[in-house]
Amino acid sequence: MNRRAFIATVGVGGAGLTAGCIGGFLEDLTTYEAAPATVSDAALESTGYEHDETDRWTDEESFATETVTVTSYANEYSRTIDLSVLGMGEIRAGVFGAISTPKVEVAGESYNPVGEMDHDELLADLQDRYGELSVASDAEVATRELDAVSQTVSIATYEGEATLEDDENVDVFVDVTQPDHGDDHLIFAGVYPQDIPDEADRIDTLIEGVEHESGGD
Image 1 (cartoon, rainbow, N blue to C red):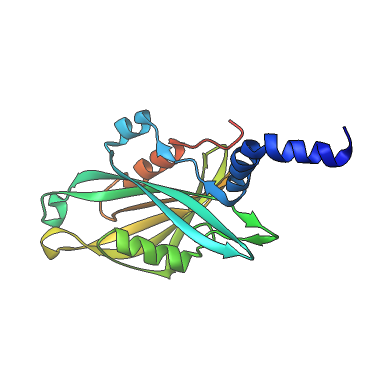
Image 2 (cartoon, rainbow, N blue to C red):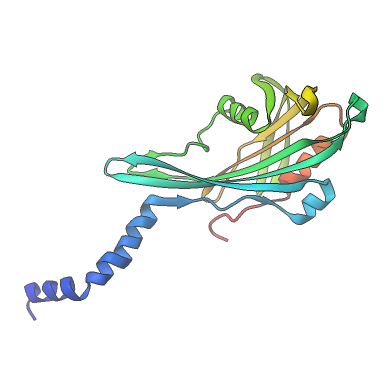
């Protein structure tokens, strides 16, 4: 069989292969999905936090002739806290979130709307998620380190104010860390009243208890 006949045969006999496997291969190149970051059952049980919801969302960005689809996840948790010391009752005033979003690079360009957030943008997003939350990036008051997702992560703590039920204002701390793990960018954030002892320890337990597939697991 000469070369021209061989190409013609592959072109006819391999039409399904071209439309199927190669099409799937190209789709894999332009579709990125993070692995969800979740808190272990043991960490939830020891802290009293409960899983509220899992958000999954998709962003699209065009690079030259390609459109890249990026799928991210956010798992949200909360805890009911007795705020009688502040003249309130029991309120779901402790909040923790674990966000995962994939690393993306196409034609030498990187794209990731969440992984590229600086602290100003991240704190603004947290304010949207935590009702009436007011916190500024220059309100950082402390940092600490702990081991999570197979590495040492640095946690920044900010002072803020949140409006809870019945329009009650409460001084809160906001903890934020942004590690990378495997193929994903991760963001862990906790919001909790300043006057509640040991709540930062609970946030540490949640962060240490995050489970996330690195891509090689």
